[in-house]
View (cartoon, rainbow, N blue to C red):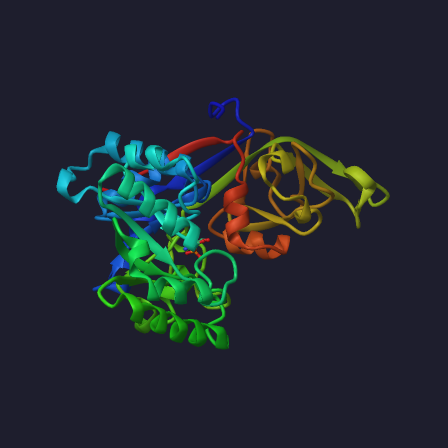
Length: 378
Ligand SMILES: Cc1ncc(COP(=O)(O)O)c(C=O)c1O
C-alpha cells in the first residue's frame, strides 16, 4: 500500500457504513441471527479492519472460504478484543470445508468447518474420535446449486446412518441459493422446499440459507441464521431496485496530466477513441493492474463533483483517460482527483458498465491504492 502523496489513487473504506449495513440486515432478519461473510479478505476491503467493526456491532458468526482466511479473522478478533467474553467467542466457519490433514490447524485456531460431502463428514468425525473431543461443524446440503454440499444421495445415506456423525456436534444445516438476486425465479421456492425437507433429518439443528439477496426474499428464507456478504459492502441486494445499503467504497484517482486534443486525434492503445471535436483529456493513475477492468475501455465513467466525465480510450495497465471537457478547467488540473468510484458512480454502476457484478469490482480492488479507513463502527 502506498502513501497518500505517492499513490496514484486513494481508496476510502467507510467502516461506519459497513456497521450501518450490518444493523440494517440484522434488524431486517431478527430474530434470526445475522452472520457476516468476510471471505476473500472481506470482499477485498480488508478483513483486519472489517471484522472488528462488525464484531463491535454484535456480529458473532463469521464465514470465510479458506482456513488461512479463518486464521486472519481469528487474529483480528483477538487483537480487537471488543470486550467479547471468552464464553461468547465468535464462531468462524470455513465454507470450503476441512482440508485433509488440516484438522489440527483448524482446531488450534478454533475454526469450524462446513462439511460439504460424506467424505468431509467421515474425516471430521474421525478427527473427533481420534482426539476424543466433540467437534462442531455445519452441514451443507445441496438444494440446487450443484457446487458444494451433500447431494441428495449422500444426504439419504447420512440420514439413515447417524453413527457417521459420532463426535460431531452440528450447529447448523445450511444450503446456498442459486438465484436469490432474481426474486421471481422458481428455483428460490424449490430450494426452500428441498431445504425444509433436508432439515427434517436433523430436526433440532438450526438452519442457515440466505445470502444478501436471500435476506430480501422474506422471512421464510431467514431460518435461524442469515449469511450476507456483498450487501454489507454496499452492493445492491436486489438488482434493479433502489439500493437500501449505504455505499462503503470511494476510489479517487489522481490526474497526472491534462491535454487538449482536436478532432483528428485519437486516445490510447489501438486509437479506439477518435475525438469528435476539441476535447480536454485527463490522464489518471489507475489501470487494470489495479483491478480497474479493461472491459471498462470506452464504457466507464468518472465524476468530478457532480459532473460525469466519460472514460475514453482503452484502460491500460497503470492509466485511464477521461474526457473532462464538461468540467471547468480549474477543477481538472494535475493533482486534482476524479471519483473513479464514488457517490454518483457506485460499485453497481461500474459493474454494469463493465458487464459484470459488484462482487468482482470489489474483490479486484488493487493493492497499489492508498487505503484510508473511516470510522470504526463503534
Ligand atoms: C456459501 C455462501 N454463503 C453466503 C455467501 C454470501 O453471499 P452474498 O455476498 O451474495 O451475500 C456466499 C458468497 O458467495 C457463499 O458462497
